[in-house]
Image 1: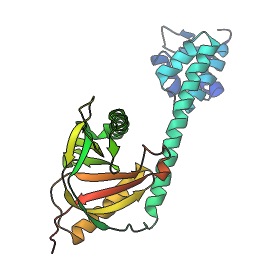
Image 2: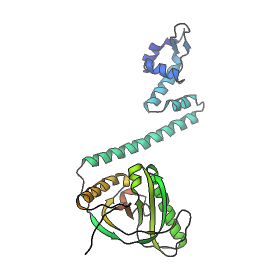
Image 3: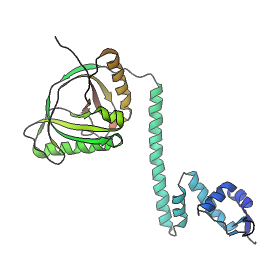
Length: 271
């Protein structure tokens, strides 16, 4: 058979297991040069070794078989490089997410710094708002877009901002992963409906509050601490959870500089 070798020898030469070579054959990724019709034995050519080595390295980088096939089948070097670069970009993004998750997990293992819990009476507030029923997984992207639209609408209408941007989030969002959400901008003046924005009076409420400083990626820790306080010391009432963005995306894109006040609706008596 000249330069043909058995699957076993090709396995040793390529550092790909026999099982893997059979899988790649079935997937059409690396097919043997010949298959004995009588015995079914697979034979590979030594000139397939460079291709096998490239495949092994791409698979070590977790590139899906379909994408490896595209790289191997791409006749143009620039095209191959673009496909590989795109995969490397995805790996770097995943690595950044992994590092962030590891950092957050390490923080969770450290004793938390207690947050100051305060009480706040919030009066009814005139605002412009965007309300929508959304999926929990889409909340952050929707929230960013809504804030941008509210800010632009207030500027276009010449409305004067009278307080920090805020949000109302219904229990359904947390219980079922989908529910009503509202983002609003307190302002005075004669507001008109523009795009998704419309005038809205935000209802008053009694709140137990805690301030979260930094990225919203670990805001659940502050929520948990506030909830624990309410369970122990307050009477929780039905109503949306509130957030006041004392410093947020409208002021800076640096999430480490964000300050968010979380409000949990409670029942209080006065005087």
